[in-house]
Length: 388
Image 1 (spheres, rainbow, N blue to C red):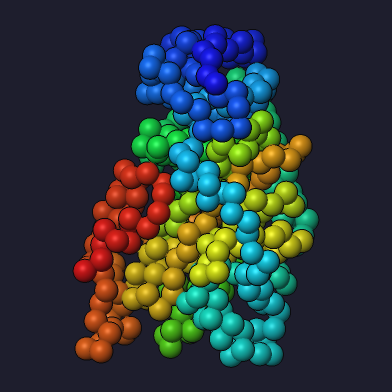
Image 2: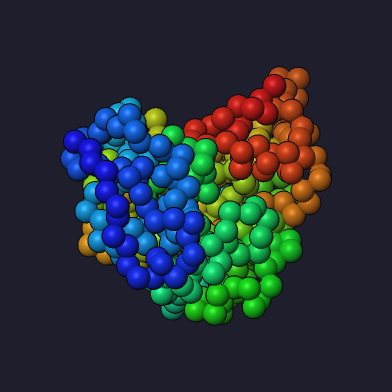
C-alpha cells in the first residue's frame, strides 16, 4: 500500500533554506513489493524536493525513514533480476608482483580478463595498506559530516571541481538509487586544493598520486597485450575524476539498488572498495559477486577503451545492490580518461584492417562525455550510439 506523509525531518534540514519541506507528493512505499503510484503523486516534484534538501540519501536515513520514497522503487523487471542468485564464479585476480619475473604471463592474464569479463582484481600493487584504509575512512568521514557542512558542496553542475550529490542521473533515471557521492576533479585541471573538504583533503591528494602510478602501469600492460608499445595509452590517465560513493543502510533493499546496471564511459576505472560487498558484474554465466579481497584493487574496462581497442577489450555491465547490512558501504572510484576533450578518438588504426574494419566512428571526448551525462545511467547505449 501507499500513504502520503509530511516527513518529519531533523532540525538540520530546516537550516538549508530548502524551498519547502517534503509534502504530500513525497510518497513512501510500505511493503516489499513494487507499489502502485497514487494518482495524486507528482514524481518530478518529489524528486525536486529531495534534491533541494541537499542532504542526499544520508539525510533520509538520519531522519529515521522506515520506507523508501516511491521514486527510489525500481520497475518489476529490475527487481526480478535482482532476485536471481549470483553464480559462484569469481573474477580474475592478477598478482602484479609477478610482473618483474613473468611479465609476459601477467600480460596474457590481463589480456584474457580484459577481453572476456572486463573486470579483474589486482593484488600486490605496491600501494601501502594503511593508505587504502585511510582513504576509505576519509571518504566515510566526509559523508558523515554534520548536514550543514556537507551540503555546502552539494551541486549538480558538471565540470565543477568538487560536487556532492545523490544520483548523477537523478532527473533522467526511471528510478533513483540508494547512494550518495562526492565527486572530485583531479585532472587535467584539478580542483583547487582548498575546495576539497578538509576532512578528506590529504587522503584524496595522496590517493590520486598512487592511482596515476598504478594506472600507468596497468594501461601499459594492457597496451602491450594488444601488441602496442607500453606508452601508447599514457594519455589515458591525464583526465581523472575521483568519486567517493556512500551506500547507507536501506530499509527496503529489495525494492531498489545502490547503483543501477551500467558500463563506465571512460578508459579504465580503478576502484577501492571496503569489506561490505554488493558490487556485481554480469558475465556470460550470469551475475558474479566481486567479493572484497583485503588490500586488493578492482579494475574494469570502460566504454572508451572498448572503442579504441576496436572491441579487443570489453566493457562490462556492473551494478551495486542496495545495502541491507547494518553498516554503510564505501567505495572510491577513479575514472581514467584522456585529458584533451577536443581530440578525436575512435578505433586505433593499428588495430583495424580490411579483415577487421573499425566498428565505431570517430568523435571528440567532449561529444562522448556529453552524451553520457545526458542519458540515464543504464545499459550500453553509449557505445551503441557511436557504432558504425
